[in-house]
Length: 256
Image: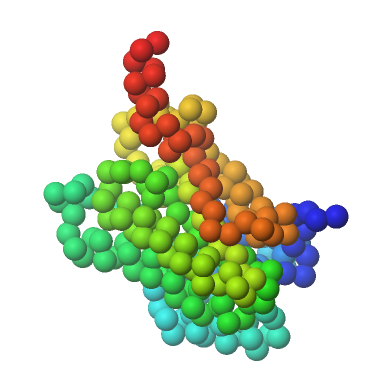
């Protein structure tokens, strides 16, 4: 029976040291996958500690903006005799400058991680993939709306384009590429958000609450699993309905 079991599969997760990435690594290990978790530090971050005792996980230091670093990772995977069955481009950063304050350097810094990092990962690991492999790019509700942090928003819109081209180009090889778009998820990145931002976002979220990293990880698992074998080029919001109403919720609430 087709299910969520990933036994025998090797999955690379970037930005796995904390938050969504760590949750994804934990869930994938629980599903039976061999997980190669990557992040910036030389040693596994505390967020991955529980995973080591729960299943097959390997940690590798990686800066996703470093092309030679990706090549080194690919060569190491090849030396182990493994193929790559899944890639989760989770690593990302934010920058909250508004339109008239943002610099070109702001845009470039965020782009290098959120977009170029994903491109480098696909280029490095796709040669190690066979038919049935799956790539999941982690976007954002900011990539579906006119969100206010312009550098972050622009990067996530660009990631959508990269994902669609990758789905088109890799489809003939049987490699699927999909994108998940988290909304307000409780992570270390969102802990620094102003209270006003949290309140306003919750007001625009039909489910009326923030999301958890486990809820994002569950969708990632689905997209990596055989259950989604005919799904590619898809964009799945994990945002409690925030992007679905196009701002109409405020109008609806005002007319109650």
